Image (cartoon, rainbow over all chains, first blue to last red; front, side):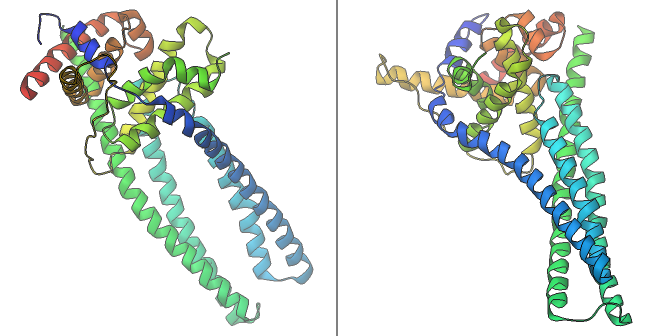
Length: 200
Length: 162
């Protein structure tokens, strides 16, 4: 098989691969819809959060209920901010043409570093939610909020959300660390290749 | 302006071969190819010269693949399923031999480190040094150095394998 320059044979063998693009074409519609749907879902989440936030704020204003006030603050400021950040990130993640493969790795490395910071914020977000539940029950204890069945139920839901978020953060942080190591390893290979090119 | 279907017809097989040089798992390979095709399609409005579609698409493909390699680092390694080869006009022996050689080559290409794998896959897609330079953003002289090194490594891997 080997000759001095086996490129022609390599090319023939390479082009002999059978790539089934028909199946890919059939699934492509679903893929495009999914990406559009994710952005629509982000927008919808932000709008629902805004609507609920306004409703909670009005209720808090009329009833002077601290629980609605705290909920309005969360809905109006935290949820839309996260939704906007998600949409911007999704749009930017699709922009491939400006990068080289090495640039993509540097971008991915920066992304992992940014994500580790975001995960730290998410961790404190979970902790804040637990504190929020604690604060609510302090208010109950102080007589500012009346203890009732929906409040107990909501507290259970909030605690479940916070604990799930904290577990997810832990899992994602471990995976993110692996991705960061992979970026660093692959970037080192580019540096090695460049060093060899300089020597040549 | 190209439609999504035109991009698939024109570049689908070549982009599929590039995806295959990065991903062994058939299902993930298909997913990666879809991601590449979609990224190419989304970037088409920014393509200034239609004649450079191939170079442009291959750059996007390699960027998507590099990102895929990073994102899937946590997944356990999977079995390499051999793709079937077209059987038109070949004897069973020729098909088997061709299949075997093609499979060995793809496996050897996957063993190349990324800087060498990228120049080699583009070279195997019949691209010139200047087109590889445009796709990867490295100088033509460095393309030559990487191609030579990639060829040497590829021969070694095929020799070890054989």
